[in-house]
Length: 259
Image (tube, rainbow, N blue to C red):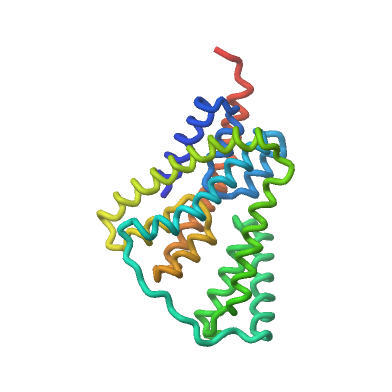
């Protein structure tokens, strides 16, 4: 996974810098597969063009969200019938579970775990499930509302961006996303030769971002979601160290006199 991240960041960052003439800060911050809030926080401090970065990053998330389920139909992935829910959480259980997830998320955020609210909530819900505190499923309407709000959140990232600005950055975002998906697929093919796991499960675990989407798709396809989530946690932890290192390199490079 570490090698995969290095290849993705190096190649897509180089492409955005050389082909689309983006400054190094914008190019390399746009190339990171994940940690959008962290990346945007750094961009807000004056590294790179925040508008272009958010377009490219959101394009990546959007394309992954759209393309991965379609790819799951055509790629050589073993399909499993998803389990059919027969019992659902009661209102009291939902409130208690939500409170536990929020508390765990705040703790994770306080100790500076990447994507703390998401990972903290996942950890709390998983612990409660494995501990036998509940066995029921989430109510269908609540799941639908959650997906709608997720889509609205992604769309809100485009507020205030002009059409010309969007098109210019979107071209780079599409190519960068295609390169990233190709790299992940090649790496997954190699890993699948030495690891006895379904190709789809490996791909979802090594996918460049969209933690929630990959987890949801893993559940739908019957894969080991713990495996998928663990790899995404490792990816986010690696990015926590990689992003500051690359920013330091970019700033140092910008301070150097031209040859």
